[in-house]
Image 1 (cartoon, rainbow, N blue to C red):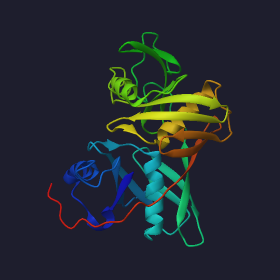
Image 2 (tube, rainbow, N blue to C red):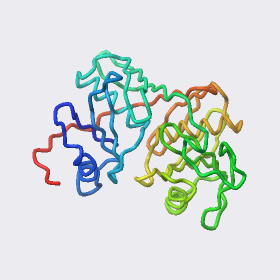
Image 3 (cartoon, helix red, strand yellow):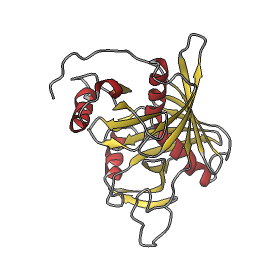
Length: 276
């Protein structure tokens, strides 16, 4: 779930953007969401997206968030086009909208661009072998050793393939330990992936700065990239990634990643006064 705020109209002071995200995203005490997204002007694309996690930290990109963002700006007549270029901290992202006869956006396909595999750019501190990439490398964590593949889709991910999915207790336990591991200087998102077939998998995610989340678009992309590299998934074919919150379709041809998924509006509201 993401809250979208039209900063073209509100122009919230920069020093308050992070705090507003914390206040509005706090579960049980406010609206509650995984993050808050600001609609901003762009000098290099059609529109600009800034996304803050619910702990107030600003994220480079968010696959699920950018689909929600694309639906919002189309249905609020900010940009009335089914092809939109969106500026993010990662760079410019291309979105293709699927629109019904009553002008409602039901799903969005995002060209996520090329994944980043170089340790220095993710970033991840190389192990003692000084490897250029981190693919299926052992990482001791607490009482276990996980084989991780590090991939950046504009934000960093550690992908771990498992035989059996972790329950919430273990996902919290190991996810938080990996997120803050010393090899990841900017912390990292963690995905545990169970392969079902060459075109299907089940994924659970511990998101950096958030914790357990029902879905992660960039995490789904990173998981498919790692799976294709390791020969677990079919290259260039759609892979169905089952998240707790629903399914995403990811395609990786060895160069760029396409992500397609549904998007729904939950509600629209107005906050008349907020002290923060």
